[in-house]
Length: 70
Image (cartoon, rainbow, N blue to C red; front, top):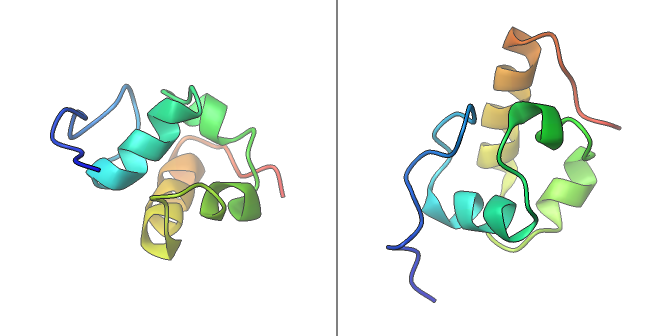
């Protein structure tokens, strides 16, 4: 499946790659606050999100005083 139609960056999320962005969009996630409602395990279960994207998201969450739900 092509991810060309997926934006390179969504809302206030850091750049994590189009496959990961596509997975988040499919889950209805467009903000860091929404990402914080997920655990690392839940995010990794989404097709297109890998450890690198989760680490980038974790750093962005920490910068904003947020954390994963784990």
